[in-house]
Length: 453
Image (cartoon, rainbow, N blue to C red):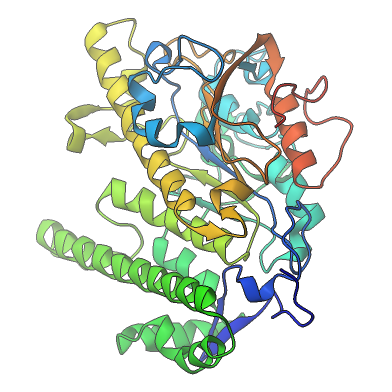
């Protein structure tokens, strides 16, 4: 359906220190077109990279069969409901994650190379040098189309100086997004801060003061934009009114969950230490991951950004998972020496992370957009920079992509690539789908075949 005077895609609901970007409405669409570098009225493609640390228990990850009739091993079971939206990739390699003469430090290298395809500099922590990551390559080209060129989120802060792994500087282990060879894009780990950033009306001290006042008087972001919301509702059709109501309800529900998580964290910290806690991260790791994932989804839905990186944990993280019956630290367990008990616990951790990914994917699939869903217009890569945590090997990496990238990726398959196929080849192909073209990236040898619809 065509419209002579569509509502501008960059329409905001505005209030005191608040600007709520809107999802894609029918009233914004003069035409319905899938496009990567989309302008107003077109459906944009988004890309995200979700990283998990310490490798994977590969026998419980890798499907036995190739093609559309692939099976779901233990770790991937939670993704069964979205099988038709997945592309499981086996055989991809990050050669620059190997020592290549630099000796130990596999964990730091695996994160540093994950989105760059470049061997990180080993410098005893005094200097960092990696490469521009694929997300930032894209952000530099299309970032001007959105309010934020990119979004970097995670659940663990991590140090940004000193050395963390066998002489490698800490930024390698704690970041996967790099603006340039020496500048990591540090991630936001506070759901509150990430959420508030999406809806800040402008920048500076006044916004912070308004946010503080809003929280003091227990006001929702939506309380300040109701007048604009009612006015817009009267200008759009019934389908758009439903979509707008569902979107604003989702915004409010995430806001409530953040408030609830902060309250629970505050209560728990007061009981344990008698001190007021920093209101940064939820005490529930699962809720922390899901809240950050929901912030990413809101950012994509409102076209606030089209590029995101999300570290579910830092590389080398030794977090314990007592809530699923795993008391030992993750990194410690990853050096399993083929102990079946340890392997079982690692598999359980991997399965927990995959369930959080499944939550994100299913949420995106449930959100209508254009002629399909939000997920249809995304490429969400999930995986690790190490295969087996004990061997620290960088070939046959565990990688899965969710979403059809506007119909340009044929999902519902398991594709196995030749040994030593560079992971960077995949990044070149993903960049193409974002409207960003390059001859090479990292250690690429060409585009990755087999993705096409």
